[in-house]
Length: 340
Image (spheres, one colour):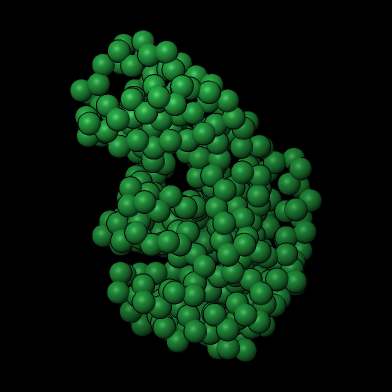
């Protein structure tokens, strides 16, 4: 349930209302919009008398919310969330380009890519240290040693960093990481999501290969319910009957998510296609559709990459994509248009 208050509500009446709601075991999430203060009520709201609340002088409107996700619901938070990642921002008109290799391999490779994507227009550096691979015989990443190399690249390039976590025990390695990524395979690892709700770091949550948009939002709800509201959603392609590409990029997910949630939406055209030549057109499509950011895989020597070389761009090709994307940004659908 949400309670929309009139402009400049009487402080004493507001205090009486919140005290009464709390006594009914209702959790209150306040969101200050442009003209109104919105109270998001979480709990068993069936015990509340809507007509009684509507009759209060400070109340403009009361609405019941049918969606099971409350914290991630735009109806509770009418304004777009701006997430700060080590000084780089995404959401609310701020566009973020995240780039880097699928897997961290060596210090030289990581530093070269980091400086290359920085010069090409990236504002966030990615690199995989813990790698969930389909085959147990594929390269699994360097683990903690990989994160050490990522932090060195962070210092060399002056960019904040994001890397993927696979299980709770790995949190000990993430002290100097600016953003924690939850990959597609762990989107419904609910114990991990709960734990990340208590972490004071932004979380990049990727959509699962065969998960619905509502399931993605419910996974975000797990994190936000713990108190960590800095969640960025990532559409990375879903599994369909089509085999021409690695996955199928769901462009429609962007306007749907913008309508349903205030959380920033990032798109990963690299995993969606699995083909380097398709990254640029998909990145452009996602940008014009209203995405708040892009995540692009970049490697200094893609043919020799230990992971996902076929979908990785060189730093030079990445710079070309970044220029093209920024050129079409003025034509992108705005968050306000998409949320109508």
